[in-house]
Image (cartoon, rainbow, N blue to C red; front, side, top):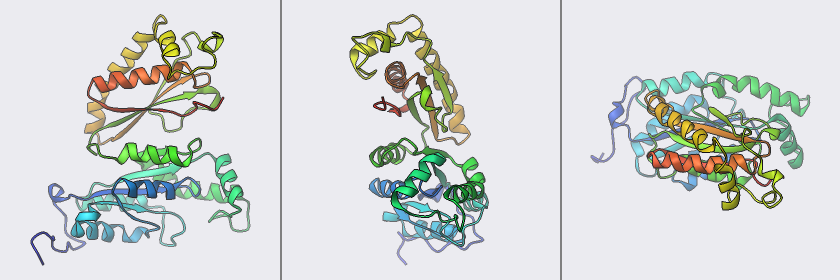
Length: 305
């Protein structure tokens, strides 16, 4: 064995965390949520992806990836209920990896029940846990099985309102070339009339500002355009609103990093997610970047009207 290849590590051995160069990501979530798209996107950013891996083999796979190095330095394991070896104790399996010196990150892919039903019906497939019951029964059974995994996930990606390209970009933003140990902040605009983002850590309400919808010259434009952005940010209290939240996020970011949180979603809402929330999101993202924080903007409901 050459010096560049580490020796095999027995199950009972603990690896020195300083010597673990393998970046592990565990992807799970509901059937129909988009795990396959997430897996392909991870491959695009350089991950070696193992699909439908039995949970009992997670530690063995991690050790093999550590030994192999090279292309396996970044490894993603995709778990779902198709594997008969899957159990509800994903938390225990992740804990076992951490006890061995690994630092896995768990990604949970989710979507609203009505969206999942439409997706299954569009491809005329039954749910893996449906049996002789309805689609809704299979979805409910799977949610119960995955409840603890969702609760313990490092990041939840809700794909209800994302197309394939938007989901791919989201994964690339999360797992691309930046330092994986930094807190990554997504500033997400949305419309309250379409519901709250389920993965939001902070929710900002921009509806206290005058709505450009009622200005005929601005109605058909969006917060990405200068005219709307200037109108929104020139309103009384708008800049103080953004600066206050930017300061709050900057003050709490080091604590989140110390506690091991890697992803923070700041949701900015207005009525329809077209004008005020979009302009505020862009400005807040710019201010966070000026504070040397890793932040990017995303607009969930832009274009829905």
